[in-house]
Amino acid sequence: MIEQARQKEVTGLSMIICLLLVFGLYFPTTASEHLSVFSLSAYLICLALLSLLIFRRHGRPSAPVCIALLSITPVLLVFTFTSGLSTLRLGALLGYGVLSILLITNLRDIGLPHWFGRLWVVVNVINILAGFAIVAGVQSVDDFIVAHYSTAYDELLPNMLAWRKPVLTFGSHSTAAFFLYLFFWINLQTCKLKSQKWLMVFSVCYLFLTACLLSVSALAFSAVGLFQLVAHVWMSMRHKLLWATAALCLILATAAFWSPAINRAASIHVAKEIIQDPGNGLAGRFLPGGTMHYDLQYLQHHPFSPVGASYRESFMFGDDGPVEYMLRGSVPLLLLIYGGLFYFLRRNLVLRSHAYFLFAMIVLFELGITTLINLRALYLIPVLVVYLNSLGDSVPLRIHWTGRRV
Image: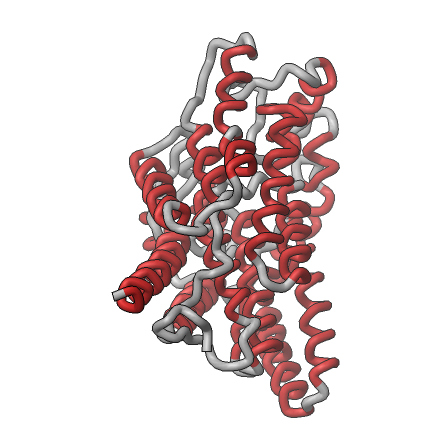
C-alpha cells in the first residue's frame, strides 16, 4: 500500500510539471493593460498547480522562511495604503502572490516520467517551426499568434511580427529573447551532460531565432550564446560534431543573409536604432525623456515611500525589475524577491553552477524588463529547474516507480 501510494504521488508530481510546461508555453493571452479573464485564469491555474507541490510532506521550507517569503504580498498591501495615491491597480498583486508561492516550493525531490523526453522534443519542434515560420513571413502562423497570444496593447504583437521577429507566444521581443536563450542554454546543457548530440540542432536553431529578435536583450543573449556554443564545440573534441555544428550555423547564416523574406537593410537599420535610439536600452530608459526617468526621480525624492499597488500616470512598471521592486516596496521588497530567488534556486537545483548561472541570468535580464512576475516565467521556471536536475543522471531521462531516478 505504501509503495502504491508513493507511485501515485510520483505520477501526480510528474503530471504537474508537464502541465506547467504546456500551460507556460501555450496558454492563450489577450492584449490588455489591465487584468483580463485569461490572465486571471492563468495566474489562478499556476497558483493551484504550485500549491499542489507545497501542500505535501517535505513540500516547503521551514516556517520562518515561509513567513518571510509569503510576506511579499502583505508588504505590498501595507505600502499601497500608506502611499497616499488614490489610484489602485490591485491586479498587480496577483503576480507577486504567485511568485511568493513559487519561492517556497520544494522541487528537488521531483523526478520526470520516462515519456517527458518525448514531450520536450515536441514542444521544442513546435517552437522552432513556429519561429522559422514567423521569420519566413508565413501569414497563417502570424494570424494564429495574433489571435491567441497578444499581450499588453493591441499594436504590440502585430508590430513585432511585421518585423519578422520570432516572439512565439511570449508577446514581446524582450521577453522572447530571455526564454529563447534559456531553451538554447538548457538544450546545450542536455547535449553536454547527457551526450545527446542531436539536441545541438535545437540549440543552434534557438540561437538563430534569438538573434532574429533584434532587441538589446536579444543581441546580448545571442553574443553570450554564441560564445557558449563555440566553447562547447571546441571542448567537445569530436570532429563530427564540430563540422556538423559549423555546417548548420553556416546554413542558417546563409539563409538569413540571402533569404528574400528577410530585408537585410531593414534589419541593419533596426539594429542601429536599437543600440542608438534613446528610447531603447538601459541608458536610453534612464535619461531625461526615457521611460524610467520619472520613476528614478520619484525614488530619489521618496526613497522610503514606496507605492505598493498604487498607480500614477507617469509611472512605468515592467521596464526594469529592480526599479519596479524599489518603487513598489523599497529595499524590503527588493531583498525579499532576489534573496528569495537565490534561496529557491540554490535549494532546488542539484548543481551549484546551474543555480548561480540561472540566478545571474535572471537578475541581469531584469535590468531590461521585469521577468519574475511574468506569467510565463512563473510557469516555466519550476519546469526548467526540475529538468536541469534530471541532467545530473548519467542515463536517459526516466524514474523508477519507487520515485528514485534510475
